[in-house]
Length: 228
Image (cartoon, rainbow, N blue to C red; front, top):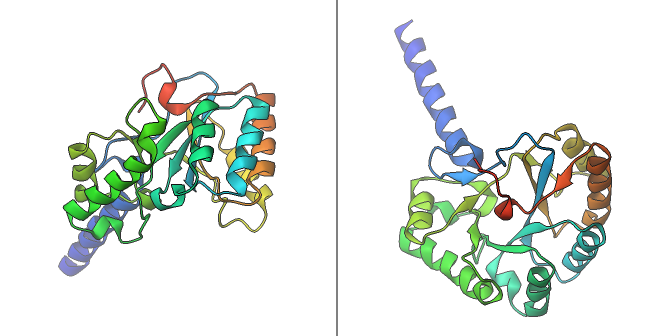
């Protein structure tokens, strides 16, 4: 009985620690905006892992057609040679975010100094296109005390999400569309990827459906309400 209780407690602690690190929404280590605090029918789109020279322009075309703003969390090394694309993002009313330079799966395990250097290298690639400090989103949304400390020391505000589309793993983009549409709630911040080949079609479907339901799209970092 005693060992069963101890084992249960240890398993519970382990599960909590995994959740705290893997789910940016937990806010255990890093305080991040993961939804807009509002009862109004507002939604915010965010894109990770670009820019992509083929897909991102098509995503921008679609957003422009519908008049929808977004935040693009860029991987630093992918911005090389993409200055015109980054400039277009900003000129069309979107925001750029820092998704680290390397987007390494080992990022959360790095020493603090190496972690901060990687984040700063990404900012150097995008900051001259902006009039404010970029938002920060850790790779894969994984957090821990070191990631939180690095963000705090560099003065970053973090942004997560509360709806994950799984657009990069869906066999058919319509599966991602169904997942997003089922989860529509006021204040949702939706995670997408501007590297997904079918993203323009996915965007058209979710934008049209959301507007039919009375929702409007806002840029998460510009929303006037208090964010949580």
